[in-house]
Amino acid sequence: MGEMHIETERKFLTVNDSFKAEAVSSHRIAQGYIAHDGGNTVRVRILDGTGILTIKGPCFNGMSRAEWEKEISLEDAEALLKLCHGGIIDKIRYIVPAGKRFFEIDEFRGENEGLVMAEIELGSEDEAFERPAWLGEEVTGNRQYYNSYLSKHPFKTWDS
Image (cartoon, rainbow, N blue to C red; front, side, top):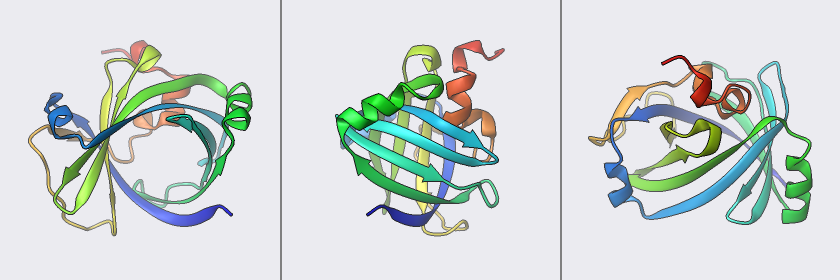
């Protein structure tokens, strides 16, 4: 069975790559979007060789949204990636502890190379959290930084 929950996330850019020295693990991720409509997304991901299907609802306020996730076979995930609209997002995710929480920091490859984004999942929207020195500008709620946007408008195509 898949699991439904509300996730509350904040997204940030990074000012340098010193977070790599603090990472406790890293994972290779390839993902794409089968559907993206009215704020709903259907995402397929391969995480270190494991297939995952995720359905996300629209954001309530730029920070919180419903999410349903289920593990699928690698073969199914590879087949579904071929159905995706836009490009495939390729990234390395670093897991970095900060206080009682963890940051997931995505270093993008391919068409999105040069973009590094840190995300933290919180228990509530007003929860205080540790802000490491490498943490930069907050981009929570900025759709340009959503992976679903990046799959259609890669970072390398943005005007700097």
